[in-house]
Amino acid sequence: MFRRLRDELEANRREREEMREFMREMNIRYERGFQLVVAELKEGRDQLRANTAATWAMVDEIRGTSR
Image 1 (cartoon, rainbow, N blue to C red):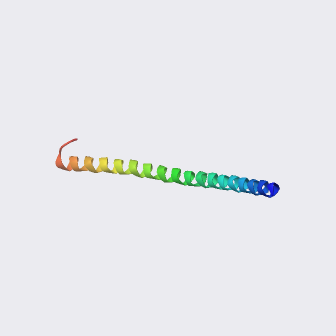
Image 2: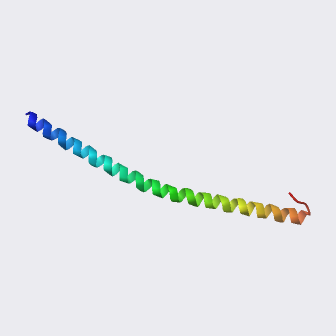
Image 3: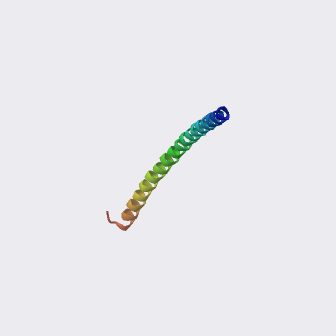
């Protein structure tokens, strides 16, 4: 009886370790993916800011004023 319980506990421990390793790998994959998305968002933000500044510069030039 104790041997069977010990074997079941060991099997359960191995399953938990396998699940822990699987979750660790999934987290690493998602983290890499999110890092790429964040980098693209920052690049888009910087481009938008540059375009906004250029647009306001053109508006100021048309109006004959400066910011």
